Image 1 (cartoon, rainbow, N blue to C red):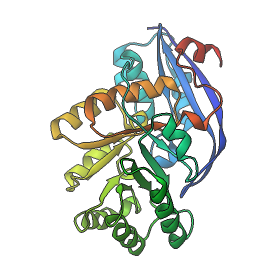
Image 2: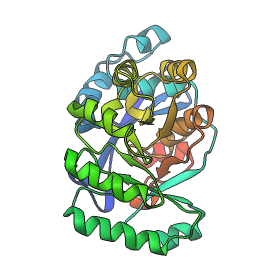
Image 3: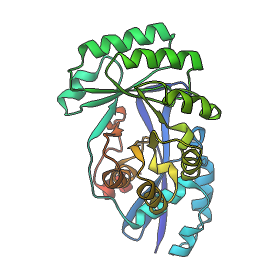
Image 4: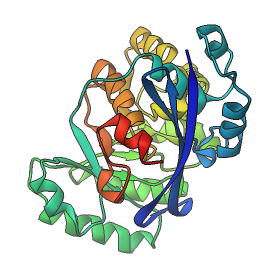
Length: 293
């Protein structure tokens, strides 16, 4: 298969604020194997290879690539990009949208019914009041998820879970650091509101390790950085995992490959409602995306 690649950079309409800091530019790589497309979208602070690692792998790749070469790729985002190019996704799934607390109405009008709000950015008292105000506005059949990006202490996690047990919150995503797994496991058994692991299960190897340590709650899977889709599919099916599939702010090429896995493996709304964060590279035409770079 003839191999080509093109790096890209696209700027967020406004900086995305998380506990990891502000994110202003999304970098990635579109790849082409003959007439099929894939996407490499590293997220180094989430546990994948760096963008530089991915570029160097593409630069060192042979002009003509075979399956044996792809199977030797060491990096998870690159594994996803190359293997998904062999099996382009064609499915859609019910989306979740990441939102600012004051923009849900326009998203609701577009058909979104599940929303995610970032927390662990401001003081907890202010954030709980903000979430309560949002819940007071949302229709009763809307779903709300909270994402802490590892930013809560154990005491704050208790406080949030107590609040959520009295509210309409679907789950709290990764409240604490990855090295506090045992505490999160204990807390997941103490409250009605579910905890979902995210940063703890960035790659397939990490996902397997958390499962072996006893996690039977929700796994938030970012397929674009998890590794080979075929291996991820096999593990999820074998163990009937409760999963949410989520974006790393890829273009339509990586998005469609992730949605294919989500349609096969998950019953929950997916976290792919993020195209409104960008002005460019939102085309569903892969050739147009490729030629725009």
